Length: 147
Image (cartoon, rainbow, N blue to C red; front, side):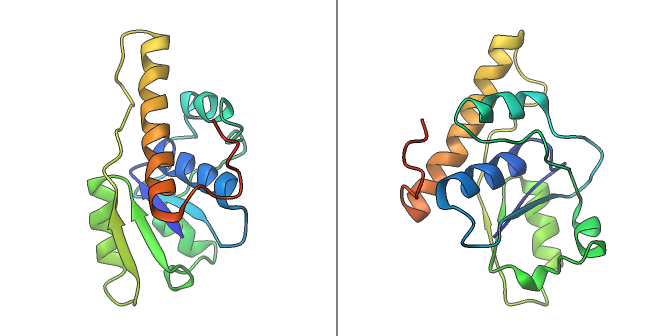
């Protein structure tokens, strides 16, 4: 399973972390961005910590870096794109593989909200959208105690 978004700093790391928490490590789960020009977002770390998902050690990477580091797209069964830009990039890269690409339109909370609490609420909405989509697709998982 490969999650992707624009920068691998907000949505895709949240999806990777939540999926690992819900379903364990029985499948290979990674995340990537179209670009790697941002570090993991502090608001993402905070809202995921609220549900027991640790993101502070996440290191952002791009599709190009992923391949440079030895992760070939052919090692994944499914790419879940969380932004239109990442969906286009994933479709371009997977045209020679037998690999499904799905698009999940997840809110991009970056740059929204007038104050810290408003921003956190928007990040929580994105986190909860991801969690709801995962559970709708694969069931409640092994970590059903997640809030």
